[in-house]
Length: 462
Image (cartoon, rainbow, N blue to C red; front, side, top):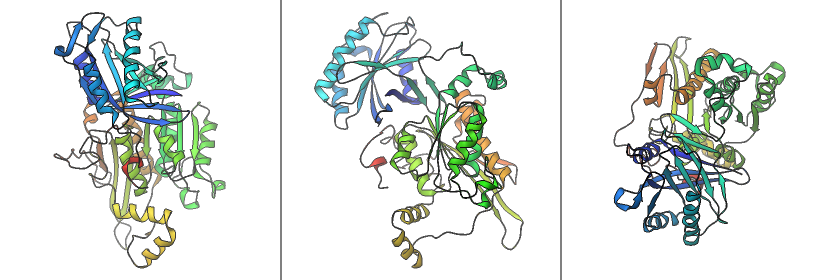
């Protein structure tokens, strides 16, 4: 079982501003976290609220020690109890000591004994230490009061950063990635090798995305798609051949990636993304690429990004021609980076709720769907959309570069633009701004941000 924590960037900055100050004293704060649990795989904590312990609430604050009255911790426990949230203790080590001390152990042991005695439950709590440079180490405390190290700490927002115990400047890049290292350094190569990325939809954009991520050295991919290959797919489906017609897209792509031989682990799911096995993959991913035209699937991924603090890079391409001619009318691509702080796909008008309803109905109630379609109460299937491999590949490349920029920051100005629209036929690119006074329940309010596991899942009926 891996133990990880994902921290909203705004929470990280608030904590850093409080903990790291020029006087070089230890300080403390508490974090309330949602939970994401996949049995026998990962126990992930997701930050929801930060509670700063001000100077007035400290008994002492020195170079090697900080102490406070536990009444403040009990108040945080009371707030976390009703929804079985986790509580995280975080303090700083001004001298940069990058391990938990015996004093830390003694204090935390009694603190988390209090937490389990008061709130009950089997879910873990955690503690973090922040170094003077802002880096973090952590451990989880279990109900039997044993502790284990946190294997990965993610910080997600406009940028995407993470800490893990063996992250080192001495990492030696494999020979296959030496040219990449010359551009961005060996830390990027190491970071990419630690990522698990799920791709939902492995058609034109999804297959291109998967191969680009493989050649960048991403450690693990999960490919989700229920469709099989048709002959009409071959003009844009990377990794496929004529003999693959009739086979599952994910199986063909998995086989192709393994043949490349760069070491990327690949798992596949031939299911709708709402299936429990697919959801477990989403919950154990560091990042998700949405490469599907399925509106019902997009709704799920859209909510997932905020509930589980897992960034989603969603992409789309529209090609249309004028009626009764081959004259191009629209050639438009879109990339959306979804995270708490950005407008979601519903707010930006990228999801058609009527189509999503029809898609769900068709999957779950096919007979009812057929009847309502005949009565014109649901939207039916239209003619196939135009598709050109150069443009589907181009939008996939732009989406993968979006990920690289969020990790490496080679174009800092672009980080403030979560949504990007490209009008290829006009040579234009626009960056829609976030909507002010946004009242969307998903992206406009923070009630769901970091909520994690709950019933019903994502507070929606699938």
